[in-house]
Image (cartoon, rainbow over all chains, first blue to last red; front, side):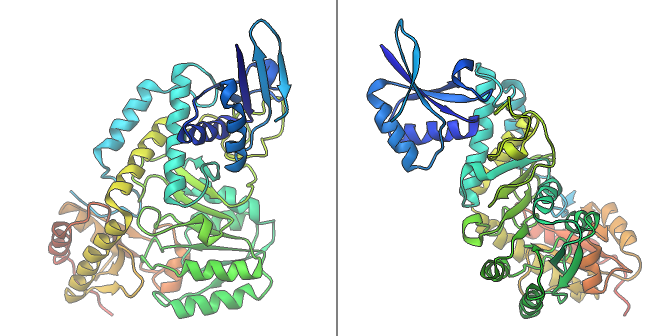
Length: 84
Length: 369
């Protein structure tokens, strides 16, 4: 199973993103960004399901909530950045 | 005790404020620093308050920065906009929280509008000052001494038209009068959390219409490999651990305001203040009252103001006498030598409070011109 991560520069925009997505009916969970995923030190990310990632990115952009990057992790495989 | 010193701090708070503080103290760790439950609970507590403030003051959540008080907020704003030696226009009713940071920067101050309760004078003087090549404007929304409500919407429009950056000190208006960062277009709006917003002491808010310069540097839980402060809000001006219990209490205060309505609170405060002003005049006091006045009134009895406040205190009435950290305002009103006795109503303003104040004030000697 694949999981997508949307990374943010700090907790506040991540929380705002979480709220906007939840209000739009999209399930996501807020968590710390794994260290290797965040080249600038510390951050928070939203974990979302593959079916929702396209909508999530669109909603965040529409709401002008800045996020850093999107990563995908497949079970038993590595993680890679994806451009959406 | 009849507490009428809400201009200094709102001693009486809705009970849910202290419950929220206690709850946060037992439940919240450090926000934005960890992913475990207690850290996330803290982050959620802070974010909810940020969001409630953003809703009340018409801005985005990231534009709400938490500080320790209004003075802290003003210092950040002033240090961002005012270069050493700059020419700055201020109203004639500013608090030392504005004038002292400007003095420290050796700013050249133009004081615009000295007449109390006179919008025409305020606007005319302010406009004239803006034409003299000032680098920034700083003005209070409501005088902390006299309750004079300045025409900030029009002053803000004048600054916007000329491209002059400006700061509004909303210390006495936040929680009672409408304050919209979006419609005012201010660079910064500073306010305490512990006055009209009914939060605990040690809380303040800075609404940021532009990128501020940090006053403190340190950890933010973000961008940790960078030795410079983050270039994004609110982290840029929130170095170190924020006052989570205080912010939880502030959020409870904001929720209370939202449920009751700030207009209703303002109207009630004004009614009681007017009653007292009229009553004090009948007792022979010199009372500073007029149009465009909030729930704060100053008066001068016969004899010394501090002595008068002591007489009132002995009868269970808490007011503040003296200069109120605002010598500029007293200079404008011609009361620098005597000071005044100030009473300021809060969200719990009642006719009984007004009656008790007047009964106690009847024991003061009348003003001798």
